[in-house]
Amino acid sequence: MTALAQQASADKAHIKLRGITMAYDDFIIQRDLSFDINHEDIFIIMGGSGCGKSTLLKLLIGLKTPATGDIEYDDINFWQSTQEEQTRIKQRFGVLFQSGALWSSMTLAENVALSIEEYTDLTAKQINEVVSYKLALVGLAGYEDFYPSEISGGMQKRAGLARAMALDPEILFFDEPSAGLDPISARRLDELILELRDSLKTTVVVVTHELASIFEIGNNSVFLDVETKTMIATGNPNKLRADCPEAKVREFLNRGVK
Amino acid sequence: MTLSSNEHWSLSINPEDSAALIIVPGGDWRLKNSLPDTDSIRAYLNEHPDQQSLTFNSQLITHWDTGFCTFLISVIELSKTSGIKTDLSGLPEGVRRLLALATAVPEVKDTGRKPQSAGSLEKIGQFVIDLLRGMPEALHFLGEATLAFIQFLKGKAQYRRSDFFLIIQDVGPRALPIVTLISFLVGLILAYMGAVQLQQFGAQIFIADLVGIGMVREMAALMTGIIMAGRSGAAFAAQLGTMQVNEEIDALKTLGISPMEHLVLPRMLALIMMVPLLTLYGSIVGMIAGLIIAVTAFEVTAFEYYNQTLRALDMRHVLVGLSKASVYGVLIAYSGCLRGMQCGRSASAVGEATTSAVVTSIVLIVIAASVLTVIFQSLGI
Ligand SMILES: Nc1ncnc2c1ncn2[C@@H]1O[C@H](COP(=O)(O)OP(=O)(O)O)[C@@H](O)[C@H]1O
Ligand SMILES: [Mg+2]
Image (tube, rainbow over all chains, first blue to last red; front, side):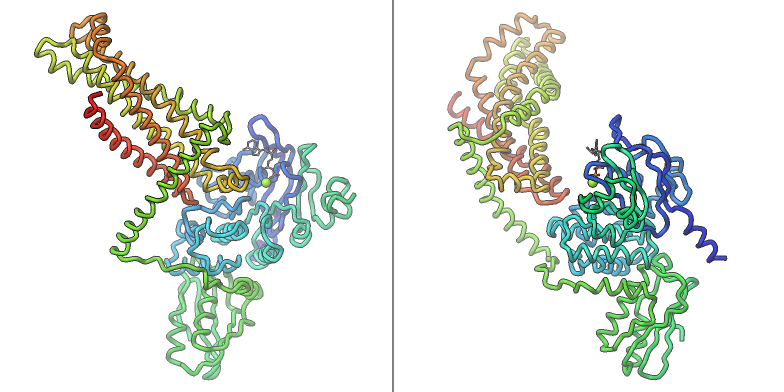
């Protein structure tokens, strides 16, 4: 019975987009976006810079309203839900912003601890343990008492990731996580993403340009096109590379070689 | 043997023989279920100091998350300090890999951090030291600002004219409404306060002298100074402080552009020019307020008031007022820019810089007001 129920929930899309148009006022960024992000996907959002990847991510985390269309999380329509329901849905998200967006007047430990203090009733000691563990996962053990301005950009990014993972979210969103990381840290990050998916069953949505990590971790994707202002491909990036009907997508995935 | 449990989880141990300990956690080990700490295991180990190895049997685990991982990390830490070998092979695959990731990068021990607990005496000492350290820094800034000003006089300063005019616009015309309001009310207060006394002698006409000289020599400059400290001094500190946070000032420096000339100079110039003009405007508004009071409430005609004002005021008073205003302008720009450039690299540092800019400039303005008044009086101007 439970196995069956699990099966059913795994078959259903975790996030479902239907006919989404996103715009800043009258300036349309992308239109007609319809795709599914399944449970335990590592879903890649790709496309040239300025095509609206970050905007799409903002839409997916509920920071921005779509101009038209619906977004559903586990079949709950986000923009038709009550305020409380929206908050409850958002609590299941963990987000790593493009610039890290750490709170500059708090130490790394305080940055990670904030949501744990807010939403759980752990003791101070337990919170410290969780914080140290999360920082250790991103390779920042021992940096608890540093302020964001005292560590490098790449380290800020990793600390942002530790903060995003603080509450073991169901869905993790990353905006260009490996930009600014050294190759070894970038690789460790990929491993960590795979690990989170495999062991904690997290669904992961990643905006990235890194071909290596697209093929390494991605099992589903969407490609946004700047010129036609819509999605022109969706599916497993390894398959798209070989036989996507759109030349643009193949070119992107083969590093500009047609 | 069960060490501890609640309705969600249980923690048991399975002492196979005397030397090998098997830890058997069971149930739902998620953070929300108020998980146990390692005290019970520590107590057991203290009672049985002859343990040599520690293994896990996790077949009874149904759910786990971060809480389970942190518990295990504590257990591993504990066994390390007691010199016991740990074998993780009995743990779920995912847990083992996460633990491996968490320990892949060793903890950085030597981070150059000093412990930050300080007694109250030490804090007082640190405060005094910081205060003394601030002095040379402030003087240094003053020197650099002066050098930038000399560059400007020579016509060699690098700054963008368009920035300069934007700042002028911001500190000048945009401040008119608030200056109008405050000057009008101050003129009104001066007129009323004086008039009640003067009326006893039938000398209401001298309201014109009181308001005219009071506004022109002192009040207009002082009030404008305080308004501009709160308005523009704070804005300067916040702008420069945010640029400091975003490393924009470093970016200027690497291009060989002096932030003093590029950022501080135009702000100083703008305030030095605009505060006297606003003061002049404020004096006129104040005198109009006096006129209105005198005419409506104290039976002075507008023409009489006008003539009396002309008689009372001469160029001397105007120059005294304007020179005070210029000094206040310099002080506001100086404090605002100084605090902005000294700003630390966080959002709260920007807040502190802004507060400190306003406090510094108001203190400096009040000190300067007293000193200048004494000087001008003793010179008989
Ligand atoms: N706050 C905003 N207001 C108006 N336009 C914006 C805003 N943010 C981004 N844009 C525009 O939206 C487009 C997509 O931006 P973005 O989503 O950041 O692209 P990217 O794919 O590089 O992340 C760009 O053309 C950008 O100019
Ligand atoms: Mg972007």
